[in-house]
Length: 130
Image (cartoon, rainbow, N blue to C red; front, side, top):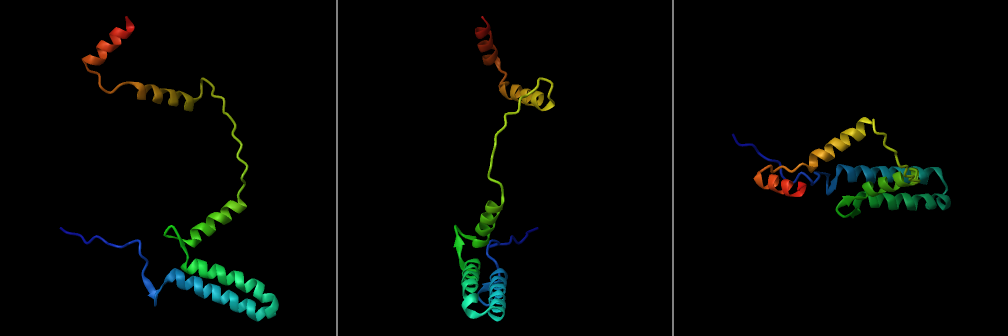
Protein backbone atom coordinates (compact mmCIF):
# COMPACT_ATOMS: atom_id res chain seq x y z
CA UNK A 1 0.00 0.00 0.00
CA UNK A 2 1.42 3.37 -0.99
CA UNK A 3 0.87 6.56 0.94
CA UNK A 4 1.22 10.12 -0.27
CA UNK A 5 3.83 11.94 1.79
CA UNK A 6 3.14 15.67 2.24
CA UNK A 7 5.81 17.91 0.79
CA UNK A 8 6.73 21.54 1.47
CA UNK A 9 5.18 21.49 4.95
CA UNK A 10 7.36 24.43 6.05
CA UNK A 11 5.71 26.76 3.53
CA UNK A 12 2.47 28.37 4.70
CA UNK A 13 -0.49 28.57 2.34
CA UNK A 14 -1.28 31.91 0.73
CA UNK A 15 -4.86 32.66 1.68
CA UNK A 16 -5.30 36.38 0.98
CA UNK A 17 -3.55 37.16 -2.29
CA UNK A 18 0.21 37.02 -1.72
CA UNK A 19 -0.20 36.96 2.08
CA UNK A 20 -0.53 34.10 4.52
CA UNK A 21 -3.19 34.18 7.22
CA UNK A 22 -0.68 35.35 9.85
CA UNK A 23 0.63 38.15 7.64
CA UNK A 24 -2.91 39.25 6.86
CA UNK A 25 -3.83 39.19 10.56
CA UNK A 26 -0.77 41.30 11.45
CA UNK A 27 -1.61 43.84 8.75
CA UNK A 28 -5.30 44.08 9.69
CA UNK A 29 -4.47 44.30 13.40
CA UNK A 30 -1.82 46.97 12.87
CA UNK A 31 -4.08 48.97 10.54
CA UNK A 32 -6.91 48.72 13.07
CA UNK A 33 -4.73 49.98 15.92
CA UNK A 34 -3.42 52.83 13.75
CA UNK A 35 -6.99 53.78 12.75
CA UNK A 36 -8.16 53.81 16.39
CA UNK A 37 -5.20 55.97 17.45
CA UNK A 38 -5.83 58.31 14.50
CA UNK A 39 -9.48 58.76 15.47
CA UNK A 40 -8.97 59.10 19.25
CA UNK A 41 -5.90 61.34 19.46
CA UNK A 42 -5.00 64.58 17.72
CA UNK A 43 -2.67 63.98 14.76
CA UNK A 44 0.35 65.75 16.26
CA UNK A 45 0.24 63.45 19.33
CA UNK A 46 -0.91 60.34 17.48
CA UNK A 47 2.03 60.42 15.06
CA UNK A 48 4.40 59.49 17.89
CA UNK A 49 2.38 56.34 18.53
CA UNK A 50 1.33 55.58 14.95
CA UNK A 51 4.89 55.42 13.57
CA UNK A 52 6.17 52.75 16.03
CA UNK A 53 2.97 50.72 15.60
CA UNK A 54 3.39 50.90 11.82
CA UNK A 55 7.05 49.83 12.03
CA UNK A 56 6.22 46.88 14.27
CA UNK A 57 3.37 45.91 11.92
CA UNK A 58 5.68 45.92 8.89
CA UNK A 59 8.35 43.96 10.78
CA UNK A 60 5.85 41.34 11.93
CA UNK A 61 4.40 41.03 8.45
CA UNK A 62 7.49 40.89 6.24
CA UNK A 63 10.80 40.77 8.15
CA UNK A 64 12.55 37.45 8.78
CA UNK A 65 15.79 36.79 10.64
CA UNK A 66 17.55 33.54 9.73
CA UNK A 67 14.37 32.39 7.94
CA UNK A 68 12.37 32.71 11.16
CA UNK A 69 9.53 35.20 11.58
CA UNK A 70 10.19 38.35 13.57
CA UNK A 71 7.55 37.36 16.15
CA UNK A 72 9.90 34.72 17.62
CA UNK A 73 12.60 37.30 18.28
CA UNK A 74 10.10 39.83 19.59
CA UNK A 75 8.73 37.24 22.02
CA UNK A 76 12.25 36.27 23.13
CA UNK A 77 13.12 39.93 23.72
CA UNK A 78 9.99 40.53 25.79
CA UNK A 79 10.63 37.39 27.85
CA UNK A 80 14.20 38.55 28.45
CA UNK A 81 13.05 41.99 29.59
CA UNK A 82 10.53 40.67 32.10
CA UNK A 83 12.46 37.70 33.49
CA UNK A 84 14.94 37.82 36.31
CA UNK A 85 18.55 37.73 35.22
CA UNK A 86 20.26 37.01 38.50
CA UNK A 87 21.72 33.53 38.37
CA UNK A 88 23.23 32.31 41.61
CA UNK A 89 24.87 28.92 41.73
CA UNK A 90 24.55 27.08 45.00
CA UNK A 91 26.57 23.95 45.42
CA UNK A 92 24.43 21.18 46.76
CA UNK A 93 26.29 19.07 49.25
CA UNK A 94 25.56 15.43 48.64
CA UNK A 95 24.82 13.24 51.60
CA UNK A 96 25.87 9.59 51.44
CA UNK A 97 22.31 8.35 51.97
CA UNK A 98 20.71 10.39 49.16
CA UNK A 99 18.83 8.28 46.66
CA UNK A 100 19.82 10.46 43.71
CA UNK A 101 23.51 10.35 44.62
CA UNK A 102 23.47 6.57 45.03
CA UNK A 103 21.75 6.17 41.65
CA UNK A 104 24.30 8.48 40.04
CA UNK A 105 27.22 6.51 41.48
CA UNK A 106 25.64 3.25 40.35
CA UNK A 107 25.13 4.64 36.85
CA UNK A 108 28.71 5.87 36.68
CA UNK A 109 30.09 2.55 37.89
CA UNK A 110 27.97 0.63 35.39
CA UNK A 111 29.09 2.85 32.54
CA UNK A 112 32.74 2.24 33.45
CA UNK A 113 32.40 -1.53 33.11
CA UNK A 114 33.77 -2.54 29.72
CA UNK A 115 31.32 -4.11 27.34
CA UNK A 116 33.81 -6.53 25.79
CA UNK A 117 34.54 -9.24 28.38
CA UNK A 118 36.78 -11.40 26.25
CA UNK A 119 40.02 -13.14 27.24
CA UNK A 120 42.06 -10.10 26.38
CA UNK A 121 40.46 -8.03 29.13
CA UNK A 122 40.99 -10.79 31.68
CA UNK A 123 44.67 -10.88 30.71
CA UNK A 124 44.98 -7.15 31.19
CA UNK A 125 43.27 -7.25 34.58
CA UNK A 126 45.57 -10.06 35.77
CA UNK A 127 48.61 -8.10 34.68
CA UNK A 128 47.39 -4.99 36.48
CA UNK A 129 46.62 -6.89 39.66
CA UNK A 130 50.14 -8.46 39.76
